[in-house]
Length: 329
Image (cartoon, rainbow, N blue to C red; front, side, top):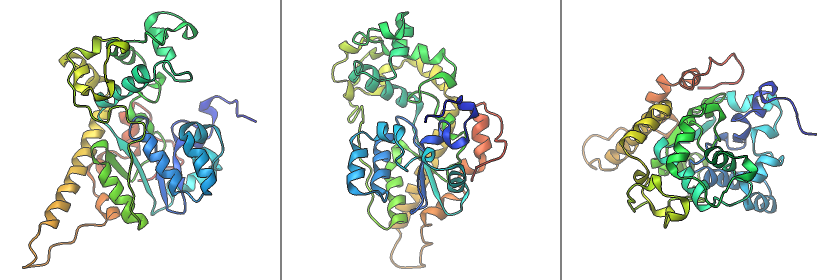
């Protein structure tokens, strides 16, 4: 029987965003999904790494978002009892990870996928936005005509962050209950794959499922003013096409916490890559070089971990400090 209590009355592992976290106890891994941040690829990877039978994996992978969200697959925190869920967040030795993305790029990706490429698909969360822009009820929204990016952006920037769909809600809100031990920028998914490969003792690759812009190589002047049907080859448009200086600044102000976190994580990822490259180029003769730190050891002193604890992230999101309960880091 479904739980009809308001979300605020639910236990932490049944509330968004924690309910969607995907633990793999046998690997001591927990993935915290953030929509539009390689989410489909990483959910699929988590399913593939699970101990479920092959037939069940195939059923889930057919529609990984719907099946994991609506069925008790054992793959999400919501599928476990509170004690087990708390243990997944508190036990030492776990790799709890998430992926961050520049908010400008993420907004364009959400718009291109949801409001251009798939704008007429039933069941998407776009109707309320289209209706708000068009000034009508959601059931009367003209999804075929849709909205321009500038209208979508104006709606987002005028809305309280907590009311936004998770595909364009600030990423910082995803860290309400779970402190990750590992954070990665979208620019360095190869680093995440390397860390997972080293931890699991097998080669891990991260695919490109559901990517709205696989080759964003076309600049389209004033793309923000075009209607969806006017946008040719939307998957190839460079996201810079959708912004001018003013709109870029407005996004930076609204998503300031996301930018702070993404830039910190991106800088740390780059430092790790540079360290690995310098060590691979070290001369064979002379004193032995200091070995590169193992993935888990490498993340302990990260700048973002010093400054952005769970409560630090909550403060960035405008939330009060965690009152107790599960938190790590």
